[in-house]
Image (cartoon, rainbow, N blue to C red):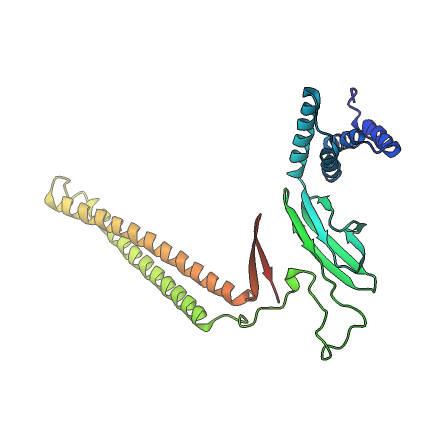
Length: 288
């Protein structure tokens, strides 16, 4: 440790823990794995370390408690915690191909993970789970089918979904409403036509302003003459009007394009979507 040979120190503490599963060795492994960037292992080891540490009796032990709890809090912000709730007849439970225990906290890297449960009679439940850093989440599994079950007409099927994304669509939400599509299309067309008309008016005002500028540029008009001041005022008014019309026209075109895009998205996207709230935000499930 003094030579900062963390890999060698970790290997030696692993041997110590294999000989005697002491709390001290477990805590040392957690702190070394944290330094090595093995965050999932560090979270599991430090979690058990904090649970097993005896109550402190002096200032040194209290400081050790504080350091280890701080290390656990830091590493848990960088990993996700999953607790798997498996069916009663489960034989094996796999997380990313590695066998795990149901109900125990499992620390994983943020991202998508694959969970598979196999029953004693060959049933299978499969689910893809996406978790974020710092998230703690319980994942329940149900077997998709049970071999040898009675026919559907004899008794209700035991088939259950393994993931929210496979849930049956809610009846009565099977397509876009025509009045919404019509209103969106009409609004988009009206805004686009208005925007084009405003831009045409702005172009006419630009031409008028250019004509007035050419007129006052004529050396025959004296800047001090009333005619010059009149033409100058007309040129300024035409330029201001052109700028306003261009601005309103661009806004109408953008709003029309947005209304058209929203209407198209409403038509194309599925309409059997469910939005579920959870602690870390919102979960959107779409069923086809």
